Every structure is written in C-alpha cells, then in structure tokens.
Length: 269
Image (cartoon, rainbow, N blue to C red; front, top):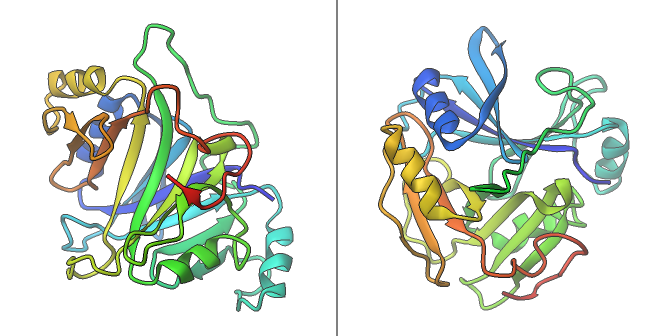
C-alpha cells in the first residue's frame, strides 16, 4: 500500500508571510480552512503538500511538525498497523501514531483540501522545475524510526540510504508519487542539537538551484546565496521569520539512484 499524498503540517505564527514564501517558490494554494478554530491552508509544492496551521507556539526556528499520509482506504492501513501491535484510536478517527524519535504521523482519507484526483505537477520545458519534495528529521533513534516507517510500521518503500556506520545512517523513504514525495530520516545520534522539539527541515530538490534562488531573491524573500552541498551540487536555504527552514538543492546529473522506480534498499549512497 502506498500513500496517495504526503502532507507536511507546520504550526506557524503568520500564515500570510509563510504562504507568500512558498508561493514565490512556485507553490500554489489548494484551499483555506480551519483546524480547531484556527486558520489553516494547504499549498502544493511540486508533488508535496505543505499544511500551515496558525498556532502561537514560541518556537521560531523549529516550529512544531507533523506528517500526514493521505490514503485511499484507511481501514486497510488500520488492519496492517493493528497486526503489528500498534494502539490506534477508535474507528472513525484519523489513525495517529508517534514515530519513536520523530514527529506525529497521521493516516487519513482526503476529506478536505485535496479530492480523489492526483495532484497537478507541472513541468516547464524551459525550467526551472521542482523534482522532489522531502520532509527530513534528525533521529536520536534512527533504527527505531526506520523500522517504524518501513515493514515494522507504515510500510513505506526505501528509495536509498545506508544502515551504517552508527551516527552516519540515512534513509530516503517513498511516501507517494513514485518517489517525488519523500520522508528522509538522518541519524542524529551524535548531533549536538539540544533545543526543544524536533530538529527537522523541508527539502526541495530542483533541476536548477540558481534559477530558483534568483526568482526567490527577486521576489524579496529571505534566501541565502547559492553554494555547494557536501556531495557537490548547487544549493541554497531560505527561512521567513515565522516559517520553517527550507533547503533547496539541485538534483545530481543523471538523477539520483533509487529516488524513483523500484526500491533501492540500504546499499549505500
């Protein structure tokens, strides 16, 4: 079973400013609604969805994160999760689970925001284009989170990654759209991050990082200059005062093995 959509849900203090940031990047609004009386919005970015919920939380750099998997038949997911020993809410409620050292994950039917039709993922032959959407977190219990997301829990397919060495493990897990919406879990065993909440970010993989950076800068959005990642591809970052950190990097020439198509396993990067 594969999730239909991946929703990265973020609590922010100022939805209009954060929404404008993603719209400048090329995303667009799917709908506005409310969650427990608070304003909320869904925006599509590539094949991913960002849910913005207005909350007063006082955590400016790492606002609270949750991940929602939109599926066709939650009952099938319920049966599989119960078989694996997960305690779930009563029938009729969204299936909500907490990753061992990660965010809360909710499995839900698309009753609001996105209907049964697939998302529209435009491709401009002249570029630039969004290739993949990733929700990333650093886990102090990497193996537990990996097991939870794969056969031990949610059944997501491993795109690529490595299971060793300890402290350097990483995995990319396909959640929807044949690899274009990804959950990434990085080994944070020796990470020095000690702040409250979860250490995480949103990553956008593009075909031309410089073109996206120029467009964001021209729109007056707070983005860094273009540099190189440790693996040698152009990248930049951006962050509004109230929104999440965005890491944008360019796809490797010829594509990244295992990102789409058949699962690649944890054979290495």
